Amino acid sequence: MEKKVTITLPKELYDEIERLQKSKNFKTIEDTIIYLIRLGLGVILGVWMHTVGMKPEEIRRKIFPEGLPEPHPYWPRII
Image 1 (cartoon, helix red, strand yellow):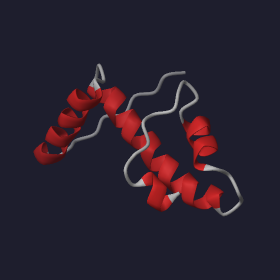
Image 2 (image 1 turned 120 degrees about the horizontal axis):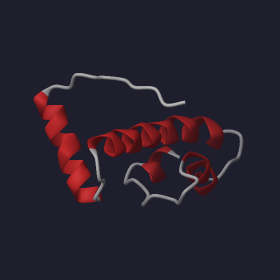
Image 3 (image 1 turned 135 degrees about the vertical axis):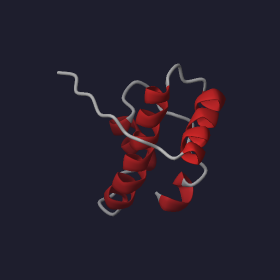
Image 4 (image 1 turned 90 degrees about the vertical axis):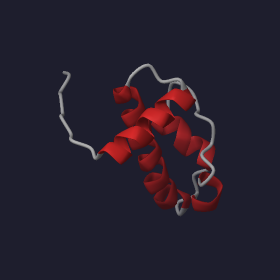
């Protein structure tokens, strides 16, 4: 079941999301925001899961089952 959420963003944040959308070739702003949410979940879960012995690639596969994204520059330091 699909659910909808409406958010209001400051212009500066929206501009950054648009810039990311263009650089990553996402079709919509929604896809870009979903990517950012997943990336944030990856960092949070990665810090926690790393303590129980999961590798960073295993964590990314759980969050991005359709294919691993390019590793974010901060991932090696955090996970």
